[in-house]
Length: 167
Image 1 (spheres, rainbow, N blue to C red):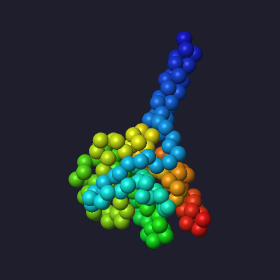
Image 2: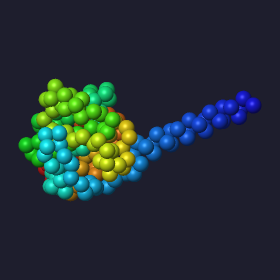
Image 3: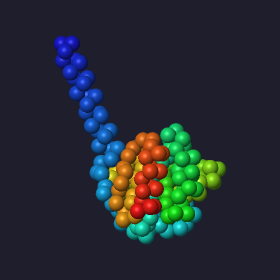
Image 4: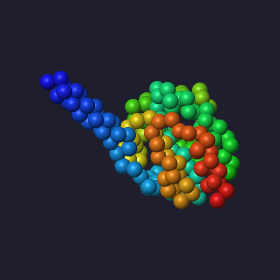
């Protein structure tokens, strides 16, 4: 009986790992979906217009410790590479209240574009994003070079951006 209990527990664990992986990135995407986003400052961002530049798109939340921990790295990347064409778009998850996102953005003085995803439409278009932080690094053609959930490797991202800018 004890062997069956252990086996059942292992099956349940594997099942939940599979479910969490499914919802992390339901579908890997290869290129940007065709859509226009609206930033919290009212600017329209047509994703097709971003072709020609390296782009980081990050899905985040104001209550995600890892997201908050990564903000200084994103600010540094923006300061270091924006003048060379890098764009960064931070998309807040649907469960964030707009007022919290706006206040947070103002308090942190985030220099890059912030978008609210109130209906989860954007998260769905990017492979049904459920977990934060989730980020994408796109090349100048709009192809996804890196797609990851969790903390990003700053040196790896810098290296890839530099290759794209030089190339």
